[in-house]
Image (cartoon, rainbow, N blue to C red):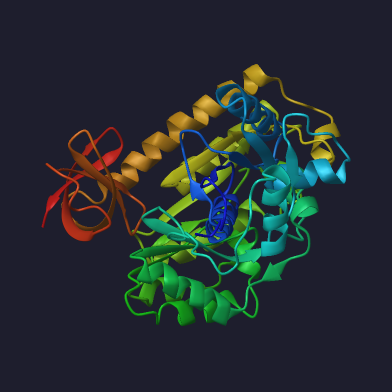
Length: 423
């Protein structure tokens, strides 16, 4: 086997926190460990790897909590801190007492092999032995990372400092991995990147290459900056048989004053124009977003501006983040810091608003045929998402429909989901 003369099969467990790029990176690390001959083990791993997020101070706190919990659960496990939090601690020359090893970068196979050999002295790698790589991902929808790095340097964000210069994956390389994912049975691919709209030579070139892959049924974009959504991209999403009618456009604030303080490269008017163009071409396209509440200097009046803008935009889904100061970013020391109680109050107000907006959007699909990819089966229901990222559920006696795309009819709403029946 991949471990040659080893008396046992060594095992690992990876947990990835944060964005889709972090999830993707964790899956590629798991692939490398499988190629070494290690096996995944949820119950009692020899190595626990946390792919840590550091986008906010709260995210770093969650890293510490997760590492301590792993040590408590498995006292003898070797713990590895990887990902953005590992990079951040390395840049700041901070100790990581919760971890046995810090792995800021693991792009090359040799680095991963060195890490395993350091933590498990009994491990012997046989390059000619049988490895157990397994599938690239266990999810129904597969992430495909095509870009990394960010040159934007928003005032609240540490990611530009950790991920480095922007980098785009060669199109042929991305297509090759996409083909492998489709061959494994994945019906939908989600393109991910830290700054996806800056893919070079162009995002449209990549999309037109990917849509030619036989067997691929859906292509979905992850987060893309609003000013990078042009008419050509909108037309591709509207006309391609494989495109999902869903744009995730990070807003962050509905106040121009706050957007300027955040160093975001657009105004609410710019954002509105993009949304209007999308809806003029695709009236039922989903438009989701991210929002930060409690940014320094966000007065009651400025928060009210955001609430009015959210009401106007009618987002189909909204990810709410309470501002958490990230040391090393300008926003961490800005005047007008907001207390946690007020952040929580505002977060609750936004949550109530977007739930109403989401229900309005989902209600549009009652009486319509929708195409759903079934992803899970719990409590007698299949659960999945339409092309428009509407959460759907359908009564089912078994899980035979999992990872299948089905044309169904929307009949009602229940707990935010669209209830459907077979067409």
